[in-house]
Image (cartoon, rainbow, N blue to C red):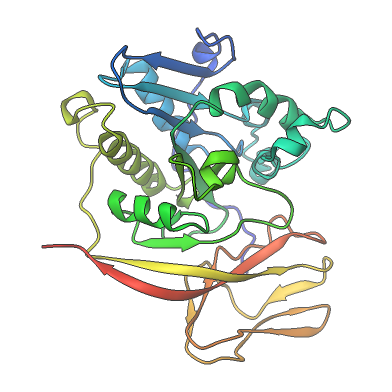
Length: 325
C-alpha cells in the first residue's frame, strides 16, 4: 500500500465569502423556491482535505443557483479542518478532533458530555439536516481509485444510486465500527422513511478527474430530484453514463488491531480475488484472507492506520445493472 503524497492537481477555493448565510449557520445556505418539492442538500467537506465537493458547492453558490421547486441547501461541513490544510501534511486536515462522519446518531449528538470540534459543528448543522429529504454527500479517497457510490445497506439507497446512473460501482454497507455516517443518519437510514441519501467517492482527493466526477454527480442528482432544470446548471458538467453498474454488498470490514498491519500488494480499491482464501495482508503477523470467491476490496488504505480503524472492506458482487441503450 502506497503512502506517498499524490500531486495536487486542483485549486482549493477560498470559501470565506460563503461564511454568512440566511440560515444563521455559518457556511450552510438554504434557498426556498416557495413551490412544493423536496428539500435537497449538496454537502461538501465532510472531511477537510476532500476538496472536490468544496469546488462544486463554491461554484454553485457563485453561480447563484436557485431551486425552481422545493428547497436547496448548499453546505460546507468541516470548515475548521479545511482551514488547516497544509500541502506538506495533506492527510492531517481530514478532521480536527474526530472524524465528522462518525458522529451521526441522535444519541451521540444529544450527549452533552461529549465534545469535540466536529460534534459542535454537527450539532450546529443538525437542524437543517433534520429537514432534508435528499442528501448528496461529496467525498474523495486517500488512494487513486475509480469513483464509487456508497448507497448504504438499504434497497432504497440502491434504487436511488441506479437512478443516478453513475459512478459505475455501487457499494452497499452498514458503515463503520467507529460510528455512524451522515448518509445513514435518522431517516436516511430508516427503511420506512422516504428520506434518502448517497455518498459519492469521486476519486483520489486531489486529482482533477475527481472534480469532474463531483460536478457530474451533483448535476445529475439535482436534476433527478427535480429542484432545478438542466438549463439552470453550469455547462459541461454532465458526462456520459457508464454502460453497466455493479452492485457490491460489503460483508465485513477488516479492522486493524494495531499499527502492525500491512497489505500483500499495493492495492488501491475494487480489486477482485477469484479464489476464497487469497491472502490480502497480514495483521500482527497473521494472514488476512478473502472469505469467499470473487471478493472485492473496497477502499483499502493505511493512511489513517491505528487500532480500531477499518483498513479495507470486503465486498461480494450481488448483481449487474445494464444501462438501457
